Amino acid sequence: MTDPMDKVTEGKDLLGKVQNFVSGFVGYYDRERRRDADKLLRDTVADRYEEHWDRVSAIQARMIGAKMLEFVDDVEVAAIKLRTFVDRVRGAPRGYAGFFDAVRINQDELESLYQYDLGLLDFSDQVAEAVDGLEAAITDPDNMPAAIKNLVDVADQASRAYDRRSEAILNEQES
Image 1 (cartoon, rainbow, N blue to C red):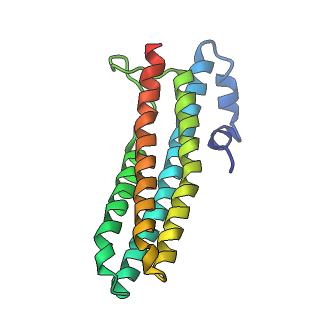
Image 2 (cartoon, one colour; image 1 turned 45 degrees about the vertical axis):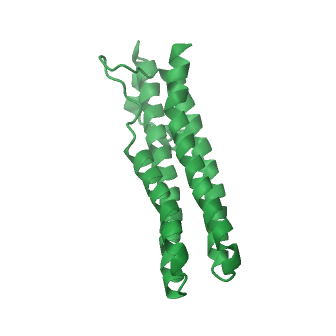
C-alpha cells in the first residue's frame, strides 16, 4: 500500500517549494499536508469498509433468496455496525483545532492519528475475512451462527478501535 502522505507531497509546485523557505510557514505547511494525507487516508479507510458493507448487503439478499430468513436480522446487526463505522470515519474532522477549541491537535498528535488510521486500514483485512466466512456459510447453514457472530465481533472491534483513536489523542495531551 502506498502512503497517502507521499501522494499529498508528490509533485510540489514552485510556489510550494518557495513557501517552505518562508520563516514560520514550514511547520504550518507540513501540518496542512499531514492533515490532507490524514483525510485521504480516512477516505480510503471509509471506502474499504463501505465495500465490506456492500458485500454484506449483497449476502443478505442472497440469504433471502435462499430462504435463510432466520439469520437476516442477525446479519443486519453487523451491517449497521459497519455502516455506522463508515459514516463516523468519513465524517471525522480533518484534524483542525481552532484557537478556542477545547482540544488542540499538534503535529505529533496528528502523526499519531495518521498511524492509527493506517491501523484501521490494515484491520480491514480481518473484516474482509469475516465477510468471506459469512458468504461461505450460505452453502453450509450450520456455520451461519458462528460466521455472523464473528462478523459482529469484528465490526465491534473496528468501532472500538475508532473510539480509541480519539482517546489516544486526549491521553497524549494530558501527559
